[in-house]
Amino acid sequence: NAGVTQTPKFRILKIGQSMTLQCTQDMNHNYMYWYRQDPGMGLKLIYYSVGAGITDKGEVPNGYNVSRSTTEDFPLRLELAAPSQTSVYFCASSYSSSWFSAKNIQYFGAGTRLSVL
Amino acid sequence: GDSVTQMEGPVTLSEEAFLTINCTYTATGYPSLFWYVQYPGEGLQLLLKATKADDKGSNKGFEATYRKETTSFHLEKGSVQVSDSAVYFCALRMVQGAQKLVFGQGTRLTINP
View: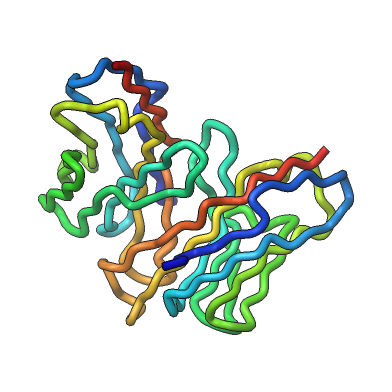
């Protein structure tokens, strides 16, 4: 009963390094999301995907890239890490059968805590 | 744009006290409303939801009523326990489209025995 799995749980990067945050879900959800959570703040949407091969920008996409080659996986790529990207990153997924749906629920992973020094 | 405002935290209460965490929203149209809870070191879990005006969501003794006239979705619990200590997030989601969540800033709740 894995749900949404994120790896790694913790990571420290140096400025300018790159890394990929992994996210996989085993619930056959079509929608997936990446959020970041800064201290004392709510979550902000970075990127989202409504299905394999389809991605779109959220509220704070600068400095990140995503891809969605399969239904299960939605990796988040940081190309040139900056101190402003120090945050906790959450991946989420949900299922929606139509463009208009009030009932679907987003399920969250446990998060990746990233520090850029 | 759409937004959610929660009461300022942190909130500290004694066990068995009554809890209210205020949440108001601004949205074009009629969103679904949610409360998520984040326990230390964990991801967010859905606590309760309401999808239309006057709906009451409830779970684990927590309740919230969707008030369209005051654009509010306040979280309440009659008697809190130490195990309720967590961060609580109010969120909205528009029904159509990619169904992105918009979160409030979160309220940290600490319950003392």
